[in-house]
Length: 296
Image (cartoon, rainbow, N blue to C red; front, side, top):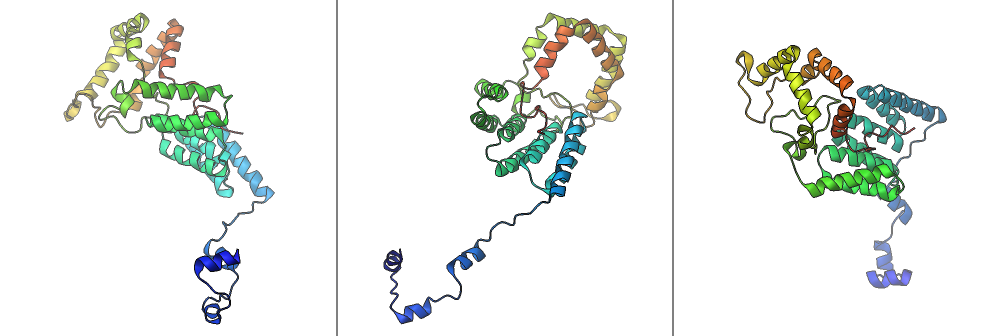
């Protein structure tokens, strides 16, 4: 080895002038360590680890209660004590619940840095990319999840669903980034309408009968009149352009309208099968990465 180095570098170990010029005062390993220091490993005590797990468990319970922001905080506190792929993966799920899909992707990537073979982290990432309509990225993430866990049928179903979206191409404005003027973040719990088959719904006789019932109901007529005032610019507000929502449109108020809720409840009681079909239309693919429960 020494001969190879001396020949390739043109160094003569017997030349005193070169020996003086090239002499160093530290061993090579010391120089290398100074240039490329090893990462500082934080040693966590058993008590700290137990506290982190406890915070993670609290986050899991908050997720079950749909308290996603509070869950995000608990997972963050656990991560601050000791970075753990499960903590990052669970927080990614919470981020997706509040439509913070970019943050969900970031946490999934952090989880994979700690555990490159963590299939659920890839699934979380795929779900987040899917909700951002980044279908190619979603496909790659779900494909990785399937490679790591080939027996997981949920991952396979989601991969197939993403590939169907890619092959189908954009079919409506919502599938290609949303309708112009729509607010960038819909209220938590609102359904993701991308890829929804509206033609199937509108051709369903039960749905059309429901629509007729809605329009004939006096309470519903009053509710729609109130909604129309917002759409048509009542109170001096300019009417929106076609395909746009007015800036002051209160979607939460619409969804919480008592008349709307009562009519929906009555219809569900009379048409449970139809409501099940509608829910299936609004529901994301079964077993998606964002719908799985947090890891224990």
